[in-house]
Image 1 (cartoon, rainbow, N blue to C red):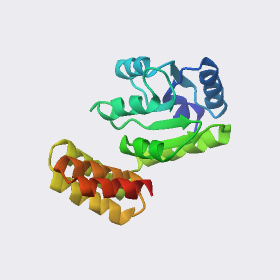
Image 2: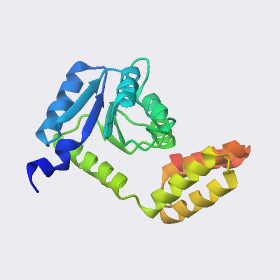
Image 3: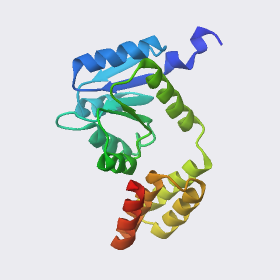
Image 4: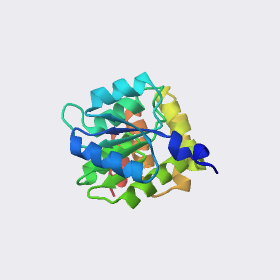
Length: 200
């Protein structure tokens, strides 16, 4: 493979962080592992403007930002039919049950916990991009289930999510999605049970 064929040279990455020194550090790390097309945004609002203004292949965003935290940016992206499938990696200094559940609900693709080294960033990007390029059968079921849920076809959504759960029985993301379906059905007991299983 020649350098001009290297997919790293063509991958467009948006780095979102309110701290200029963190954006600079991430840019340097990305350059070190071969990613050259990097755009920056200092908050969620400007990130959305950039995303809607041109093609971006991957978002790397900090969780803790003023005005629009990273998870709110992720929610906006997942609610936008044009951006919904965009790979998204969240960076956070700490993680707890509430964060895990919220990020799973919004369909985050990966986490990086601060502090981290270049090799961690590289492995996470490779894993996320490979998963997007070659979705598993479970991912296909989750995607179809989510589409059914968005269309109000709630029974059909549960069928697809059950298929996904059979393949990935320990997935908190699937449990959260099922909880959302139950909530839309008005079955709050089942919704709460699914959420508790997701946390567990």
